[in-house]
Image 1 (cartoon, rainbow, N blue to C red):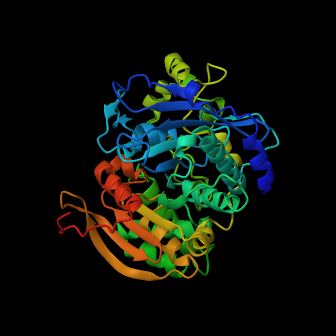
Image 2: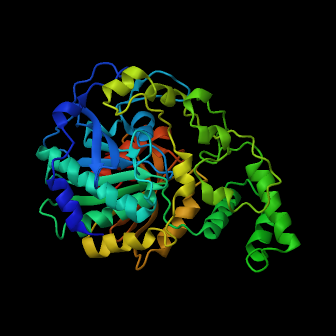
Image 3: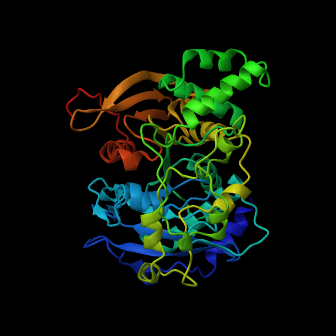
Length: 464
């Protein structure tokens, strides 16, 4: 990457204008903090990333700035805003917003970017653009630079990046671009740490599929006899009859029972998004587990037919962002824009880094002293606790400093379990699926709070 190009780009007249981008979100009710929505041009301007910024409800002049990224690849960070960590969220099947007392902007300024270009309201008019992790990280870095150039009062502020799922790739690549860019840019970004929830760190599909099977065994979804065959025979003879029978049994038991693999104790429901609000690509390509191409591509046989239920209902939030008054309030270009929660076409065209991101985590830790928090909902099968445990142990020179122990919230309830490594924390959140802040709002907020305040998670029987 030529950082000179990036620096020259932000020195040009930028389109980010806080005065013009200031807004009020429809249907949120009364709120006193400032909110912004607009576009950040990338490179020559053929790509523009849509952003939303919420000032802190506490002290925006001193509180840190936190960037939130959703994954996919191809899913909008507005999902995180309106279903997980924002001040007003839609709960379950609601079509109205409810106040979230555990909004992350109660203690921090939160920036949401719909990334990469083409996701949500973000724009990509560059037909030659290649979707991959390096380009996504570089575009995110340029967007962050341009944003700080416009919001000058936040320059020099402590900065963190958080996100979930495929953001386990976005975040390390973006962080690396930031820290390398700081070496040559006059505008330094004070990156202090990263926070990855149920994040993809290892992209090897075979390793991940075996981790999925191990997870279902631990949860008693699989009989030991089937798992023993998978462990012993499939490792050496994956095309043998015994292995294929065991794999098919796994699929029938674990994947053919309408189990929601984003939360294994939940059930799949039909997406209530009206067809007229879906892209043509969406209506043509229905899959049970959208935006998890590694999973669909590694099923042994297709004897277990998908029922089309995506296990996620984006209907309410999709209807909201396709309303005329909402798009006007958010200063959306070229209205009306068909907004979808996830862009399946980007997902299928995205080039996933074969190396994964776990080696970059080692660079962030060793070369730049970054603090890293990796957290995992224990009911998620897409990126399970087993998957994450195995990925962490692959990080070069990983060194455990405090062994696995329980941690608790301020009500002295058991919130999960935590292991400390050198500059890296791995926390399991009890009773949460893939979207941890959606399932466990209080516990995920306290996890976030302890991280940015650089505090050790308390044991569940301790008085806070």
